[in-house]
Length: 72
Image (cartoon, rainbow, N blue to C red; front, top):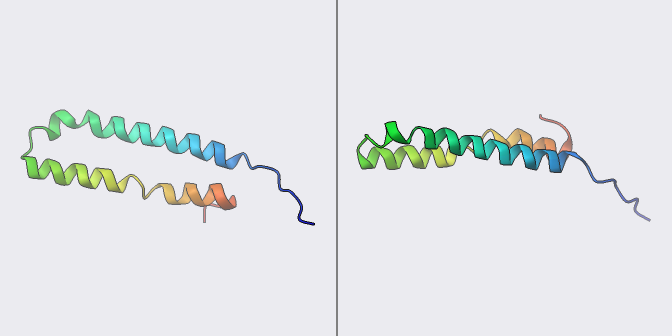
């Protein structure tokens, strides 16, 4: 018979951390709107496209930690 594993605290903690990071990223990008708003529309589009994609890359180690307990 398979032993039932205890739920890990890493998943809820990691989820809250990710949500806090996403909120901070959104505030940081939105705070640049005054500066970015003066740029040409196509440059703004590229900036927001890049800002909308690169936020995910720092989360890879956090997601790995949530699953395995290790950052590497």
